Amino acid sequence: MNYKRYIVALGVLFLLFPVKSLSQEKGLILDETTRRKFDYYFYEAVNAKTLGKYDEAFDLLQHCHSIDSTNASVLVELGAYYSSLNEKNTALDYFRKAVKYDPANYYYNMILAGLSKELDLKEEVIDIYNFLLKTYPDKVDLYFELANVYGDNGELDKAIQSLNTLQKYTGVSDAITLNKFRLYNMMDKKERAFEEIQSVIDKNPDNIRYKLLMGDLYLQDNQTEKALTYYDQAKIIDPDEPSLILSMVNYYEKTNNKTAATEELQKAIASSKMDVDTKLQLLVRYIAVLRQSQQDIKTANPLFESMFEQHPNNTRINLMYGDVLMLQEDKKGAMEQFEIYTKDNPTDPAGYEQMLRIALPDTALDKVIEITEMGIKNIPTAPQFYFYLGLAKFQQKKYKEALSTYEEGLANAEFQSSMIESDFYGQIGDINYFLKNNVVAFENYEKALKLNPQNLPVLNNYSYYLSLERKNLDKAEQMSGITIKAEPTNPTYLDTYGWILFEQGAYTMAKIYIEKAIEYGKDETSAEVLEHYGDVLAVTGEKEKAVEQWKKAKELGSDSKTLNKKIRRKEYIK
Image 1 (spheres, rainbow, N blue to C red):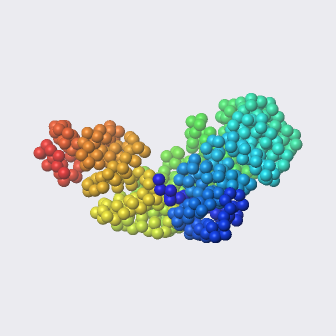
Image 2 (image 1 turned 180 degrees about the horizontal axis):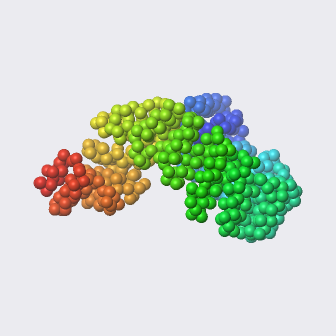
Image 3 (image 1 turned 180 degrees about the vertical axis):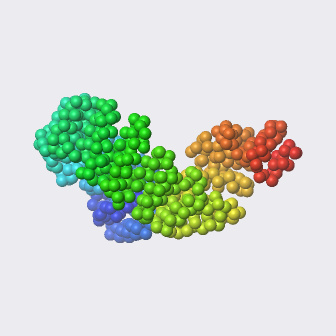
């Protein structure tokens, strides 16, 4: 394995943790010359990583480790490298050694605890947290972490003890109270669980939040009468509390009173006392109730009209109304609402994206181009608009314009994910191959796979085009093999793999995979796949069946230059 690969997200330990004196107080004692040599290489490693030279940093750290295998800073850094490479057990070994040689280091212990938790080493995590609490008694939040581990390990009494200790330091909090409630329930001590919430209510009798919490918990436990008791108490404090309305909607749904639930929501949304954000939240809930009870969603439309009257300048209502109209299959009305939102919020991609949802399935290419060009003009860093504009241009057979669009996207867009950037290079590769710029196409496929080695469409196209040129067939088979492993019923990927095997001379195996492609493709099998099947049948001695498949390919409009000759001669022609 190449251990020089390194994930940047896990490569920040130098920046996060203060570096102690480089020659450890524990472990090896270095002479002055060796210590200076170690310090030099260590700081060179720090500088290399800061500059993003991770291969060089890794080599330097390994050299440091050969000089002093007991230095905790080096051990933690190497552990982070191996963790990023998913070599978790190796990383664990390095972290354990780091703690061994610097046992009081809080950060190193926390790193070890984190990986131990990931590897389900609960007892080790418990030991680490208990040690840290003795060494760092001010780190009281560790009690919460300790309680979680005790709970996962089935030591529920100890988990509650940890939370009780934390509560002495921090006072009552929702997180502590709810966790104790959960633990008591796991211990089948329901009354004790509810007593925990009641004790908080007794200390805060005018706090509506805790009464609603108690009601919600009773409702979850199907104790609807007790839930209603606490909701009634909450109403006395504040009948217009938005959370109370939501709780009452839940209560009515639980007791199968859909009419009351709907009326509660309608009343709240129509009220002038409630803020617009809460109303939008309630509208979402109201629509969910309508859909769950299979009522006509158009019932919500008058409520939106009421919202427009009350809040004429809040275009978020338009955005939500557009979504609702989409559910009603009113695409024209939805488009109008999204256009209103986008005009008022030109730098928010949500409006453009919703408009694209309407335009793309209908292949309204002119509309797609209008939306994406507007998106690029107002949000030039958003990659999705370049991507769909490029697709639309390609479908219009404006290949050079499509290519230019993707190249412009690579130059201007901000990619939040390397996978999206990989797709851009994949599209550039496809267009270049279509334009017969094969060398450029393959270069871009390589760039795409460097960014995302699991980019299945790129792996498929790259491997297929290599097979058509009869080049690097072993590499093509390896890439195509990844696609059928990921999607074993994808007919396109199966056909590609079968054709590569055919070009390698493995005709029997090729036949198996191409037959699978036809099986999974069913009535949508392409002329190309059928021609491939005929080719395989021809070389395996089934000439009549081969002709039958070639004729089917011809009926589907195949543009193969050799197809007629194959049918006439009843033999495979390269």
